[in-house]
Length: 73
Image (cartoon, rainbow, N blue to C red; front, side, top):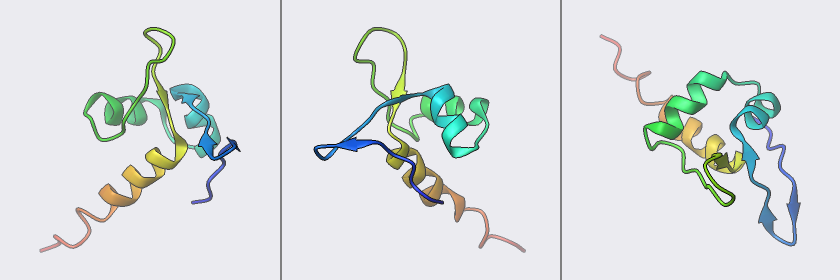
């Protein structure tokens, strides 16, 4: 998965959940569920709207993707 981030001076840009889903090609309800469940950190710098970092979403996907694959009986 390639990182489509905008970094200026070493600080990664925050994106809204719909923006992140469009950039990464993932479903919005899945990302909202991951954010609400605490799997992906979010930021609310300007009020109630939640922002995420693409690198943190990618890290959560990588961490949680391999969990169920080795448990095949």
